[in-house]
Amino acid sequence: MSIFSRNDTETAAATGAAVTPDLAALTGDYTIDPAHSTIGFVARHAMVTNVKGSFQDFTGTLHLDGTDPSRSTASLDVVMDSIETGNADRDGHLKSADFFKADEFPTMTFRSTKAEALGGDDYRITGDLTILGTTRPLTITLEFNGAAKDPFGNERVGFEGKAEILRSEWGLTWNAALETGGVLVSDKIKLNFDISAIRNA
Image (cartoon, rainbow, N blue to C red; front, side):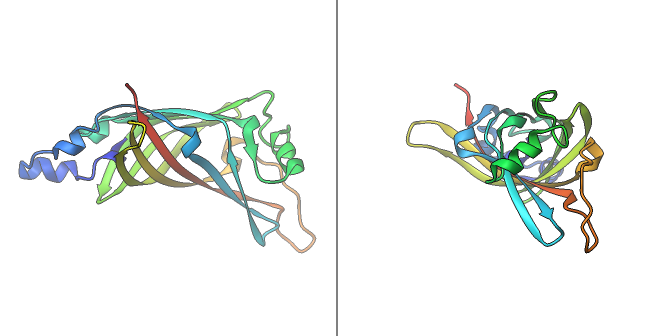
């Protein structure tokens, strides 16, 4: 992913500047650590408040290229049955045929197709998001949080990401009308990513 280069590579190429060794050293393959990562979402409920949720079971990998961030990639698989919003009845409804049809479509996936450096610590990654068997493009804006070695000797990188989708574009169309106007669940969903990834041995 481009998020792991703090340099604007186009500027560096134009000026003949060398890529900083510490950024080049980040090049490699990483595995997302679910114990220290969160994949969350926010939906507007009844037009007046936000309901937050997250997925508890997911796996993912990154290939980082510190010298050419555009060659970096990301892959994510999310188990839909692991959705959690703090309310068992609501979680059950989300897993049902009204929403995610978790029995029929157990996994949501993301596969990156493009990574870009925007300058500073800001980056953008675009890829294919598949829900309910429907695949559409998703663009995530990212902020690089840094790289460090933890007390157990693991080399970690971290970032925060945000995106917005219209759930109806993936076939998630269930809703209920309100007597006062509007609908029960917003079409727009905000996605939040807090990711810590460990470099593979």
